[in-house]
Length: 326
Image (tube, rainbow, N blue to C red; front, top):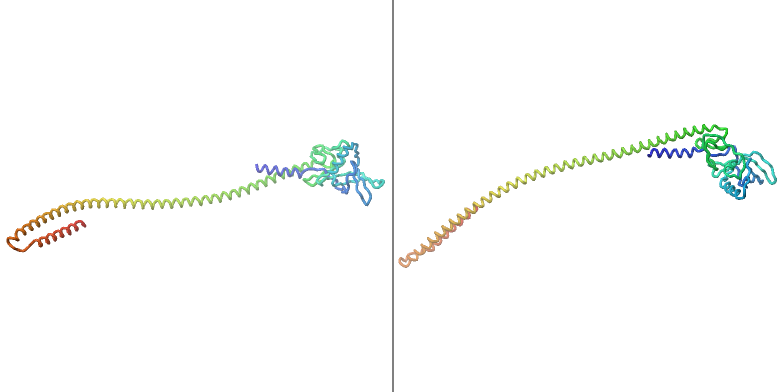
């Protein structure tokens, strides 16, 4: 679509600049004349009035038609060129019967002999010729059957006159120019597309490199993640093994504690029984001592027995403590 748009634009530009427009003869002279009436122009030359009339043209119109014609001539005749046919001295100046050409901006020229084609009030002969071209004039566009006169081919800057010029040459030149223009446009479009493709390839290459870098970074991140996971897995397994070992130690400690509690209970029972036996013996000895004192008057053995009892109890407590520590 872009290629077709470029070709269409270039073709349109070529068509505009390749137009054939009505022109002025190369030997015509520019004069500073102004519109005097519907058929005459006037200007001053060396202080004398000069009146210029289009040869073979008359005006037989109403005042309204004359006003319309004058407005048209005012708009078209900013520049005036003449091809003088004759000079006649008249009262107060000169009369120049001529071929008169007017231009609004210099881009094309109006031959006044063609005015009857636009305004019916003008009378005059207008010749036509068969030509396989299209011409543009200030009074209209003509194709195939065109007014005789001078023309400019903008495509080749050729000024020619019809009849008297082989217009088919201009047509062939225009065809070749259009073909060249289209080929040039296609070449420019292809070059533009190539430039765009090159730029696109550069962008895609840069994007591919960026994506490759991202891929490598992701692979490295995955490798690091796998390493971290492996290390954490190893630590987890070690922690589980350590926990299992601690649970086993705890169970063993619980079993040992239960055994120690049973042993301690057994020792407590044994020591309690021994203490009770000793207490009984002590009470028996005390009784015997009390009975022996009034009759025999012997020494008092009660303190010695009490000291012996305390020593035995201390020994039992020490032995119990050592057993508990074991």
